[in-house]
Length: 366
Ligand SMILES: Cc1cc2nc3c(=O)[nH]c(=O)nc-3n(C[C@H](O)[C@H](O)[C@H](O)COP(=O)(O)OP(=O)(O)OC[C@H]3O[C@@H](n4cnc5c(N)ncnc54)[C@H](O)[C@@H]3O)c2cc1C
Image 1 (cartoon, protein in one colour):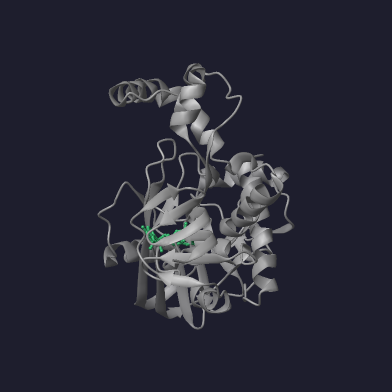
Image 2 (cartoon, rainbow, N blue to C red; image 1 turned 90 degrees about the vertical axis):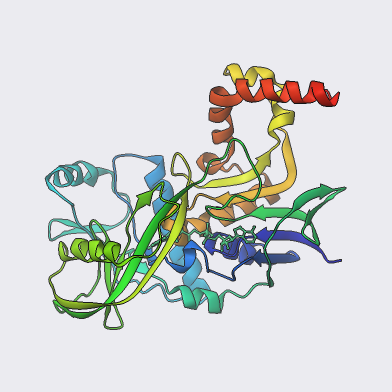
């Protein structure tokens, strides 16, 4: 029976980059479909900055973009860095752009009524799959269980497990809700205006890539039944026509998938909290008391909630997770702790009541 330092469950971009970042350990990546076959197979995968009023979320996104450009370049993955022009969507957006200008921290210039950033590019999913090589086994994980000092993952054993399962949850973590957001992105052949020297982002992202136009992405919440359909692809083409003049086209390919978002859009990273033990020891947390100490499921970690920017967020999140584990560095806003505190105040009382009933029945007490 094989023992590992880390088993990473989920071979999307979050799991793959984690496996690479943790490569100095004895690490195994597991996925039921293959590498980059989940939402990650559908991604654009555009890398472009975000603009907004002063916001820690925007700062996180843009720092992640910079970290991603460096990371991919260092391992020889082309980021096709030609720059991106962010354009306002409507009159309201024109006003917002004026407000946002003073908060922009990355170098930019004004162009065609929008902001042009050199830090805009995209990567090819196939190239990432080819160039990031990590020990991998194709297998669906059905079971994770603590046995002594190890986590049993199907028939494997690991000191540490990192859950990177995207919108699918493998175990119930009551305080973490990951919402699936369906999206499609397409590539078309045809005729459009010449000289697309850089990329555009307005209601969607548009880039000319090897004589095709890549357009992404649609956005549908609460639609677990969503499947690839041409109607949605035509919606995207209409959005792209608001950016460039497309004279004729035929659809070359459509890709679709569920991106995984947290309730506050920040990624969800860190060690998983043992809810039962933490609440039993400090029941006043449910009344709003700040936890003095959190009890963790030792060696069980999560990296999820990459949203629509997994190809940049995953780099920053995996690096921060490693730094947290090795050097006890703070995870800041991406720490799952924030979700626990919020959840405990809202749902904790009900949960604690059920937990007490369960413990009385089983004769267990903390
Ligand atoms: C249409 C579309 C366009 C997008 N465009 C962009 C873009 O331009 N730029 C960008 O940065 N991001 C983009 N995204 C977002 C990006 O794709 C996601 O943020 C990213 O793929 C999430 O990666 P992940 O690893 O968290 O999840 P996933 O890629 O979904 O990976 C999760 C993996 O876990 C595996 N898994 C689940 N349960 C188990 C189990 N029990 N056992 C084994 N394996 C399991 C699944 O098979 C899956 O492969 C887009 C997404 C979509 C859908």
